[in-house]
Image (cartoon, rainbow, N blue to C red; front, side, top):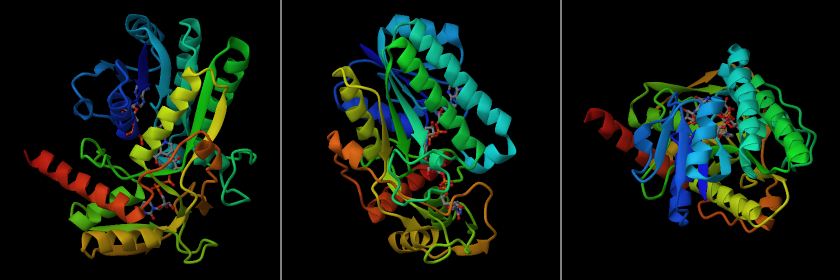
Length: 329
Ligand SMILES: NC(=O)c1ccc[n+]([C@@H]2O[C@H](COP(=O)([O-])OP(=O)(O)OC[C@H]3O[C@@H](n4cnc5c(N)ncnc54)[C@H](O)[C@@H]3O)[C@@H](O)[C@H]2O)c1
Ligand SMILES: O=c1ccn([C@@H]2O[C@H](COP(=O)(O)OP(=O)(O)O[C@H]3O[C@H](CO)[C@@H](O)[C@H](O)[C@H]3O)[C@@H](O)[C@H]2O)c(=O)[nH]1
């Protein structure tokens, strides 16, 4: 049986594809509109269907042709500040099209769905580290667009017998340790990506958005999870579902928070490069601190192998360097 990966040509989805192949999954098929993904991010043995995951005829035909028994749903728009300026675009792509995808999965008899949700569903949490059963309270349209999809999946699971694993990722970073994939979007806004670009000189400087938060050094705290460890979490989820397991919601993080200023310092140390850092006002939609309580997924057998911020930064730097070489070719 094949696994359908929506958004598989993107940053995290491409690592999921590699993890599936490394684990011996015979057939992997990707649907991606290549809006932020890259066909070259996929190994040649993977089928890429270029198109929209909300296109029900295309998705149904792909499910039938490849005998898909599980969908890993990554496709989304993902930039928190963009969701503040373009909320309806985010609700269309992340919520409305996810509804179409879920309906197609139900109609075509796909039993297992793994969904890429986010720590952004918690908003500004009252408790840190955050357990999964803390009431959700997203503070930006991106988080709300994802939470609505969680609700649709839960309701569809109850009504139509789907089994789902909702993975709430904290901040994803790093690259495949073997150098096969990484974060490639040229105008990415993520902290570690931006800092590695500043270190390598593809940006003249970077900004710290807010130094007046109620945190030890005034900058925001985040829990950075390495992307291959996150892909492994999906394999754990897939085995759980294929083994007949019940629907679950699981945080994916390490349980350790780093401030923006600490991350920038690590990038400077690991790269051996200094770069200009400007202290700027807060960015709309940012919670001050968000760190995972991740015991639930560890209880399912997930054992992270790359829980080391210096190693994560080192992988991100290596990938950024290889992108520069690719672009010069
Ligand atoms: N990067 C993070 O830190 C982070 C944290 C929490 C959750 N997530 C979630 O993880 C998932 C993957 O994020 P990413 O960082 O790999 O982003 P990405 O932009 O690299 O990947 C998203 C992929 O989905 C594709 N896509 C978008 N809309 C589509 C559509 N309608 N039809 C088909 N393909 C479409 C894009 O072309 C891209 O390849 C997203 O659902 C995101 O919300 C990411
Ligand atoms: O140039 C930059 C970029 C980011 N930041 C700060 O760094 C922190 C992390 O920001 P970023 O890397 O953009 O990630 P988040 O906004 O925390 O969102 C990520 O992490 C969320 C889960 O916590 C996911 O839901 C989102 O998809 C993903 O983009 C925030 O405080 C930002 O204000 C800066 O100060 N300067």
